[in-house]
Amino acid sequence: MDMDRKKFFLIVVLLGLFSPGIWSQTKVVKGLVTAFDKYPVKNMKVVAQKAGSIVNTDSLGHFTIVCTKNDKLLFEVPGFKTRRKSVKGKDFIKVTLSLNENERDVLLKDGYGYIDARDLTTSLSNYNVAKDPSATYRDIYSLIQSRFSSVQVRNGKFYIRGGDMRSVNSDTPALLVVDGVIVNDISSINPNDVATVDLLKDSSAAIYGARGAGGVIVITSKRGNKY
Image (cartoon, rainbow, N blue to C red; front, side, top):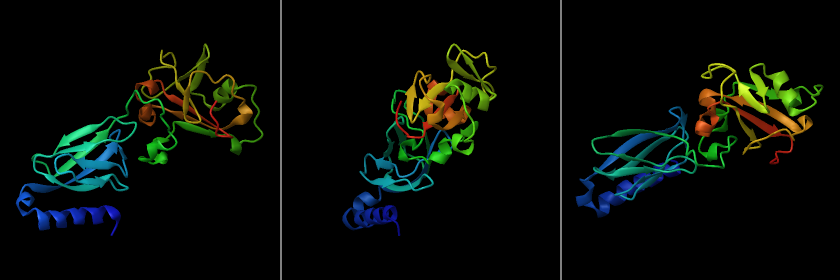
């Protein structure tokens, strides 16, 4: 029996033994927590604000909690907007979280630890420099343009063609992320220091909110240091 189930049954036993009057006012609610309507959010706290009970979501984003019939559940996790849901008249609750667009330290690689990285890094395309050791490039711009036909550069900005973007003439440049940090310029990056390059768009770029509307170029260096 895992820890979450032990906590759940302990709450049930305590309520039955010490609060027989209150028990008639309680209910068991099950639910599912996802991010961006798609990815399960694991190991996050779900709090019944009136009953005071707390459980964690499992690896698939599911939870079971004992609460009062008129309780409100609190869903709060770093980097995402806080949600509250009333349980009145409900036995199952589905909650989807959206990114807090004011969050500056957005880390695609770990998704805050609550979302599997493989779910967040579904790329439009990927280039692994280690698999092409003979390639040489004069700068980071030539590396990206030579490997990704959907990318064009104008005035030092990258523009990704395709998907929800109507054409390469879109006014929204791609967001640049280097080793998990959002940057404004990558011209100083030596192509020989690059390990991988990922292009993200549409739902894959959703973790960056409105800032990723023009797509995202994610660069990982061989050292993994911040530029």
